[in-house]
Length: 273
Image (cartoon, rainbow, N blue to C red; front, side, top):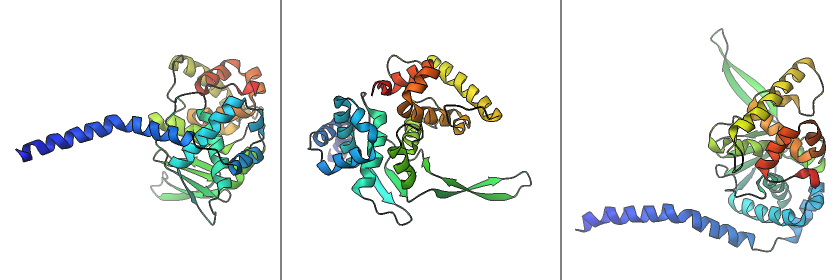
């Protein structure tokens, strides 16, 4: 009898765990959000993120609560001599959590670890040429988002992105936009949309501007968007996200339809910060 009941008992426990896990996680997150936000952390945000002071009070409070959860759930690892400090963790978390405001979020569920290098880092890539020989290419990067739990960042470029809030260049926003894009699989420029949005409207807005950017990159014509966004739709979404948060006024003026799509997606309007 016991041998018969044991599998049933184990099955009930597994089902109970699966059903109860989201509620337990939400309970834990709410406990973390209700903890006092350290003054030292607030000082870091004010020092490292000039536009924090321009944000509405309710968004400032949300951001601080999101930072607390982010730090509790994500692991930071220093590379090439970097010592992880509160300065690094808060600066990264504050910018990453900008993308999560005013909406239900699972705090980048696939992400477990943030690797931090002192400056740009070298990535080796192997490719097979037409001669059948495997070649190794080296490429200098300032950030990278992996679909299996990691984001890699240059600390120097992270600082630059935070300290200059209106140049449309922010490596943390860029890489964490990729993380959002990767929540439903491989990054393709079409993240999981919320209520009130549809993929046709999203695709129409992004496709037309992506094609325009590719032409601008080919001819050298100036663009609000970095030419890197012309690489593929995933990169364009990440680049557009940088500009949305950092150059909202010009973005809204030049590309109102695309701006509206990102405003609906991110549930914030930096134009009025």
